[in-house]
Amino acid sequence: MEFSEQFKSFIPEDAAPLTIYIAEDDTMILDLLRINLFKRGWTVETFTSGEQLLARQQEAPAEIIITDYRMGGISGLETLGCIREKWPASEVILMSGFATVELAVSALRQGAYDMLTKPIDYDQMDAVLRRCARRIHFVRENRELRRVVDRLQELNSQKEKFLALTNHELRTPTTVMVGMLRLLEKRAAGLDQPTQELIKGASQAAVQLASAVKDLGMLATMRGGDIILKPSTCNLGELCTSISGLAENYRALRSLEITVTCPEADGAKVFVDYKKVERAIAALLQNAVKFTPDGGKIEVAVARKGGDIQITVADNGVGVPEGEEEKIFQLFYAVADENLHHSSAYEFGGGGMGVGLTLVEAIAHAHGGSVAFSPREGGGSLFTLSIPATG
Image (cartoon, rainbow, N blue to C red; front, top):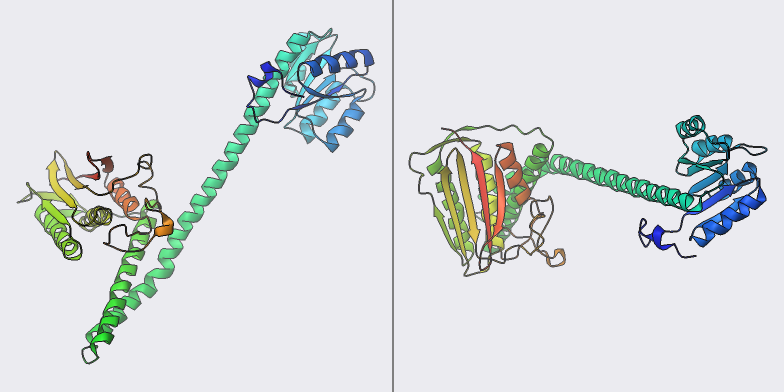
């Protein structure tokens, strides 16, 4: 049978109808209860004793139990105790023709949802049942939410373990591989040109892999809360020179207009972990390069703003799809379609592991700073990295 309109107002449309079991040894009252509740849209099964009800509950538990307080055989209170012990998710409503405040308080303390007085007011009973159904729905919903949260926490824990294990297992072999390939490059002078090119390509790929492993290691350390900053007094001009060098490399690889401005660099001193800040800026610049097509423009600006270093990286590339702005700093998130993924440190549309922006955010937060994204008018992206600095 369909739910009543009143019942629907409290329960989602896709919720399954709740089942009610009623135990009452007066068959006339039992029939009246069944007929009235059936007319109001409830699914009801009736029993003339607590023993029958509990036997049926064992086969197929009902969400709501209504039982007379005084019956031959198992009483209503004994039925309540059994339900609370074996089926704690079911709610129990007691009925009594001799209800007192003391009796009601005692029943509620023992876990009853409510107590109804005979003769039964069916409008009141319906209202109690609707409140009870709403409570059952909320409990189910909360239970499902807890299950989802637990699963998410488990997945997050697995992700953190993956980061740590990946860093641990790959760090040593990649370091050894890079060293051996570099040594091989030095000894390859007597080999033919094609062989030298193969060795050089393998060495470059190994360096790229080692850089990715290093990023994973740094990220795993930061997310574990064990990051150790090594701040020192640095010249802001040195940082700008380093960024300009990176820009020059990308200019040689891609047809991009990249400008780097540091209006306050001369003589300005900052107190930061230079290597980590440099890595964060490199990640922002690399991100801009990969999402700006040939002929595009990238502008990097470094300045002191009060007590902060503020680095902005702006491009007129493809930007971030609407609705994805909150996700771009998530670990392993990639804007591009993973089915079209191709790894590259500089090619347009080149993918990565989805670690770069997460690393930028981690470095910023470790310094007590922040990183923010905003879309540019006409298309493209603007990232602003702010890091407290003294000196």
